[in-house]
Image (cartoon, rainbow, N blue to C red; front, side, top):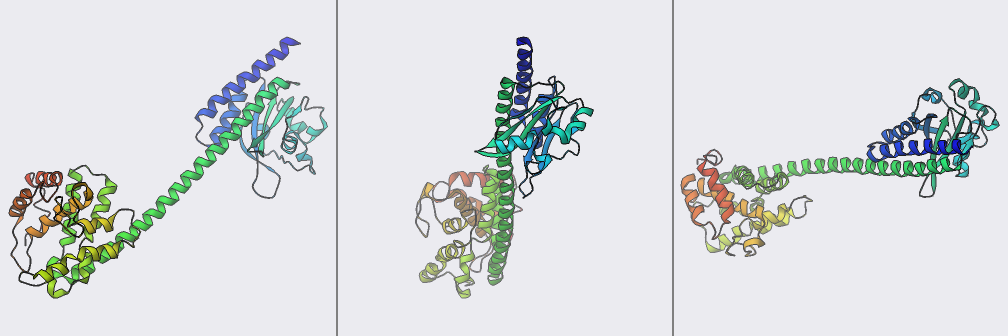
Length: 391
């Protein structure tokens, strides 16, 4: 008798070990449940195993979450519930769920509670079974059932193993469900962010167009500065996300000029000190317009800082060195390069070569040396020539 009991324990332990291996690598609920059931039924005398989960609706019929085994056809179309008022709810799974304890059927051919499934079990060579509840955070979520091809296959030591396995299954199902919900939430968040970004980009485009229609002399300036900024940022190894934000900032970096009188913007001679003061305030005006828009990049701050200089001689805050955002430093170089190269009402176009000379002269003084170096590399490779306007 002792040898038989020991052999049963060995079978159960082997089934447990097989199932645990699956638990560790399962990536979905179906893979977990079917894998566990397969791990169990790979061991004699277990011929079929399946998991029934409590449905979230008001019916008490169990949902089959996965099944495996040489006699898995036994479970085809099977109806099991945990409703005590129904014969289908008084079997091993229903009882295990209601009592929160394992339910053993030592002999399927004689146990009255197994009557609804007796003929089905006989045709598939099933002689005994045990159902254990799946409990998660004190709540029963379903049941794991194991069927054997011999009677009296389950004693207390084997049941303890299957109870432990049921706990692992419950935890695994919960973990995978949380991962699924997190991934679903992540996808929804990313979709929402993409919609928001698309809307914001459309808004930026409209702002840029409005500004450039108002000031024909700088028509295309913001667009060209955005292209140059992107090229410099890529040369410097900036991330795609950082470059994306920089491009949007460049497209509206002069949006504050909407508040500047047109006669100042298009004045064909040098500006007075008072007019310079008014013009300089466009960075603050742009900041005020953009700070209320929920960008995921610091666009308003980049726009406000694009006339700051690393020696503190810039405006409006007189920031120095690392106090200035990298994107603003890049935008400063791109803006200066494009502005100097192109025609203005108060002077002819200087051209790219002369503009590059002037920028190199300011490297490490007013303009960030690493940004100027990247721009100069593009210039030496002939990559800037097509990015600036000829007049």
